Length: 106
Image 1 (cartoon, rainbow, N blue to C red):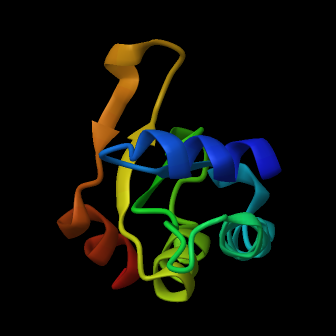
Image 2 (cartoon, one colour):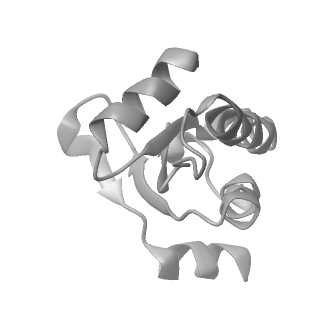
């Protein structure tokens, strides 16, 4: 994590994404919190760069269990920018917020 914090500090990327599996459920919230905390703690900068967004893989396998994704957004303040629904680059999709809301209201 030290190297990752240094890499972000030196290169100033346009976007820092947290990549997590949708299958792990609420454990992903804990992973995200710890990841962000380590980025903050290990950064050489006085104002550390944290994640800008979330990429959730295996999103096609969770059906209507989207609560963990909502918790991740709430905890981090970063949006779910992409979801993975397969094994190739073309299977990365933008999150359809309307379908998530519809799923929650069922």
